[in-house]
Image (cartoon, rainbow, N blue to C red; front, side):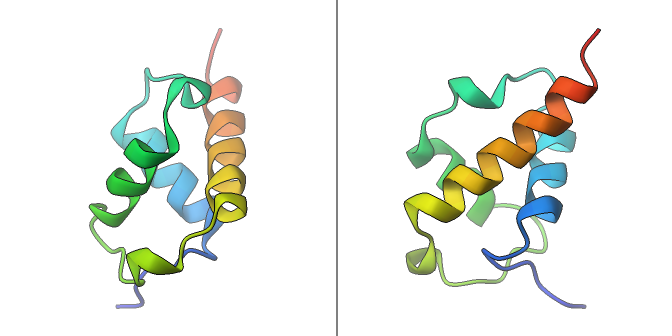
Length: 71
């Protein structure tokens, strides 16, 4: 099985949405999101390789997924 990496923005965002469907991603601190990502089943990248830009990208993709599922 191929492990998720920091470059798998959309797949990580979807996994976070599935795990936290009622949570507005824009309210999440990057430190918490970083920990949640590294704890995802299937995540296999080096935690130290994340950057603010990668976390922002994941947060925005997660937000789009969350927003699309709000009424």
